[in-house]
Length: 67
Image (cartoon, rainbow, N blue to C red):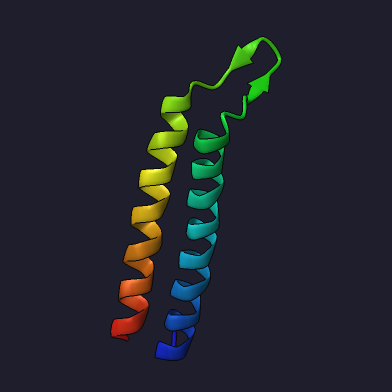
């Protein structure tokens, strides 16, 4: 894969992970409930999702800028 292809892939990945991190953070701030049938997703998972997706987004942007 060309370096330009890798850079594009990393920017797209970083953007998607950034959007996911923002959505998790919005859920935490707004207090939105996530219910699927009888099961409710605890807020802890959104905190973990915010941190994990935010880290992956930042990492991908950093790698893209180094190429």
